Image (tube, rainbow, N blue to C red; front, side):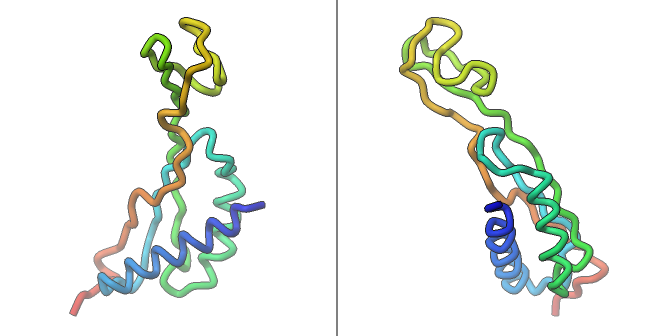
Length: 121
C-alpha cells in the first residue's frame, strides 16, 4: 500500500505551504488523482484520516479526491480516446503508436482554509 507514503508527502507539502502563509488550520485538501495512476482513492482517504489527525494543523481536515479520466492520444490518426476502455491500441485506426495524454496525475489541486481559524499577523 503505497498510499500511506503518498499521504506523508501530501502532509509535508501542505505543512510547508501553511507555514509560508501563516495558516493555523487546514480544513480540506483537494487532490487530482488520475484514473490510471495506481493510487486507490479509498486507501488514500483511509490513510489520510489516520495520519492527518496526528497533526494539529490537519486535525479533522477532509481529503477530497477528483478522479481525472485517462485519455490516450494516437499518433496514427491524431485522435484521442478513453484509455481504460481501449488500452494502448487505438479504437479508431488500430495503431499502437499511442501515448497517455492525461490520467496519471497525483497532484494537490487546492488547500482550503477556514478564515475564522487563521488570523494572519
